[in-house]
Picture: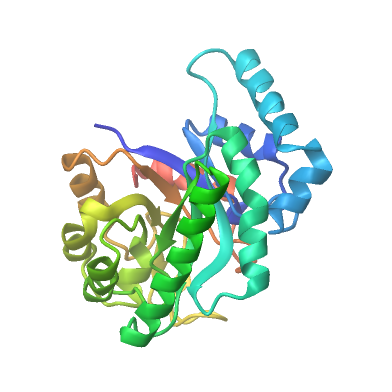
Length: 274
């Protein structure tokens, strides 16, 4: 079974939504996850400026899909927010709420939030549970359809840490940053995957070499040119019949030294990386 491949707009933050979807279509991808558009990560404000209302955006995408023809459209699979379950502020919550009408208008299933914290200990997990409780109460009261997926980014860098969260929130949906748990957590991605796969709804992938860069003790490289064990992970995801998005998170917004997202997608295809 082929993977459902998509891209993250961290790799083309200056693009419009139309340009982003066109790039995904050129590379045969089925979806895009939105983190930045038009040079900003403040997506609700940008979309309001460009499309006026959530309904206006939905109508524009419907018209584009009709012109593209059945089966040729590129969908929005997630909105990626800055909200943290541990350490999130009132402003973060307001920004999360602001993006909900846009997600619901498009029928998008997920809003990405970060885990936050450092240790996933009892105190941090209590904060995470409180944030999730707040979200659930708001979602039920307002009739929202979109839900949260939690990225393994800060404290959830190993299967054990993720397991501690799932022990207190068993139904939590996980966005697994496979590179992050491999590089920061020091785990074989297959070990992590087998421990958490029942909760994973979305996967981030990228590649790197063990050479320090400006921000990390490693350097991101074009897919297939690095050390990340993508081939066995790809085989495992396919064997499991994983149907969620597998997204190239090409972090060019944070790491300007990277080549273009177009070059990264071309390399990934030519090398059979994913």
